[in-house]
Image 1 (cartoon, helix red, strand yellow):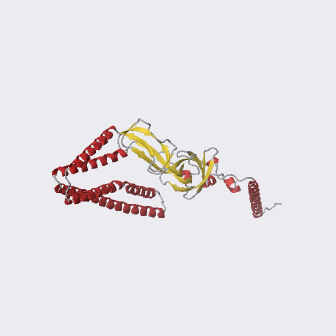
Image 2 (cartoon, helix red, strand yellow):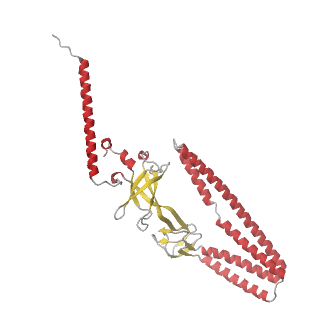
Image 3 (cartoon, helix red, strand yellow):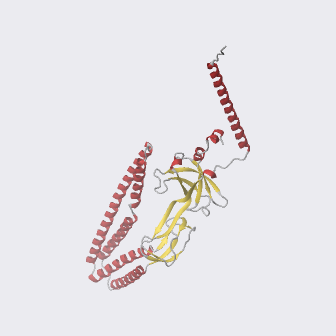
Length: 386
């Protein structure tokens, strides 16, 4: 007698048993997850900072200023040190230049001699009314010349050129990406156009200032020539010598003033790379200072983790102080181009400085990215919510 086996029935029973086993496993996992969360809620909450997945970063000032020597000189005195707070206009360092000191002494002597000679000539006779009027015209032209020269010297195209260069570099970096966001490229192109227009306007202003200086120079020469025609030869020569000596002394004093290094704005001294009696060359760094009220943290993030980082993400920054200090921050920018040596991407974020005396530029720190922490967890921890 043959026993017939219904294979379709056995297959259904096997499928039902497998489904029941899967359901039981899911119920057990859900129960374990609920129990774990209940225990976690009963325990003290862990800080947002995750030490095991933190990335190393460095603290740097948002705004730093480097002061360089204008001409070769000797460091006569250093009045500040690293970490010192300074105010705008505060004297930081004094330099000495023997050649410039000799020129300044010669200019002062020449001016004093021209002044005495002019006074002696004027005592011998009172100039006429037309001479006095022309003298006032010459004085007015001299003041206008001096103001035009100062306006021209104070205006610089470097800031506008650097801004345009930075905007173009950012646009090139975005275009170099495989799939750059269209809105970012549009904003970058708008920034390039805006900086281009600003540079063109600055160049026009510089041209006007140069033309004003040239006109003032021509007028000064004309008024000086008219003054010489109005006055006697001796008096004209004395006054011309006096004016020339005054201009020479003014220019020399401006060069001497550059030997007194002052702070352009309030901040904190970061570095003084020179000592008293050191010889420095033109362009040599003298002082590096920064405003430490606002700091920037830069973290090199490997390419394999960069997809878990975006601008605006909240992060936790730990500063290795005594005790450690944790600060909340958010990602302000993500570099589109990797470092050519480390092949990591620079991620930056701004942090406030609760105590400038403790947190200084150059301090190493650790940054915890919650999205990186979540993405690098094992699958079973993510499933259980651990």
